[in-house]
Image 1 (tube, one colour):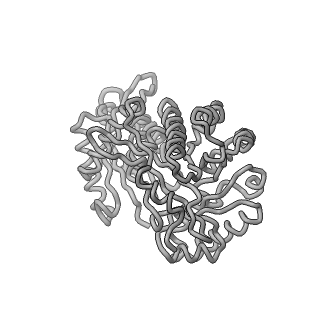
Image 2: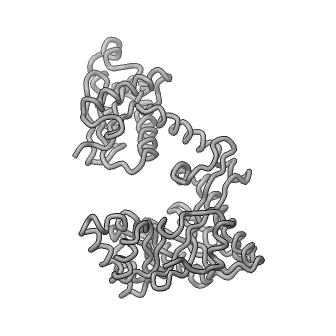
Image 3: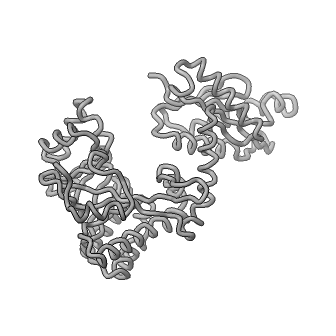
Length: 404
């Protein structure tokens, strides 16, 4: 199938033809090989890296999830290729310029994609090399914005620019609200409301950002519970997404307990959502963390479950409340027979192991009916409620249930 994203990269300011003239063809060839190896390390085996001619390379990257992922990969490539190297006794530094064209948006055929990637590459060269550019100017602005966000996110935590929005979870048998997922938003003074897709991935790469951000969310969620409690708003547990990096933090359990104590809350009102990677990376540590949390009443849910990395044998030993079926499977249960089979099988096996099952990303009545027939316990998604600030959630908590 056609590639989803196409990259075209000019590898260096001190290009091989110049090196051939000054240092000889052997060093020029060694530089091309070194750059090729660095490019290959940055991508998967299923992606394509090819020398296009002279000092230019073309990369075909398939199935990238988001534009943000593309920008992060491009930054990784620029950094990797730009590292100094010693070749045949000579110290050489390259400054790559990388142009990006997106399949579908920027062209439907390889000739058009290459032409647009080439144009973007020359924009990168004009910007001073050692950088990348999208063919689309809007995406260039997004890439620049993300670079700015990475610099200012830590300030945002300190300056109180972060907000929590909440998305309810509902039981499928009676449509009563069973919990709320806390989702962080950034109210930027210049750019307005920024959604987590545009800054969480940046934070997750840096423990100096993701840990303070994660602990801010825990404190803010507990503060909101305490506020609602004082206002006699009916309470349900709030569930917080915990990144792999934060879950590995030895202080996680103590920080959660400290927040509960600070606001005089029982552990049953707080839960965390972790991905399969949190467990598969270090099952023993994961088990210890979960046992400690469960002893205090804090509930753990496996988020984005696809039945891929985490086997059910290991799952049976964990102290978890529920499994959240990944939205990518839910979205296809009516279009892809295999996805429907996987969803139904996850529900059946999870129930046999004593776990509840929550489906996220539910957007249609047909999905609700399928999940109800399959025995799914809870659902979450736009069909019921989009994420909203606390003041918009309160009336729903007073009501206690959704319309059937």
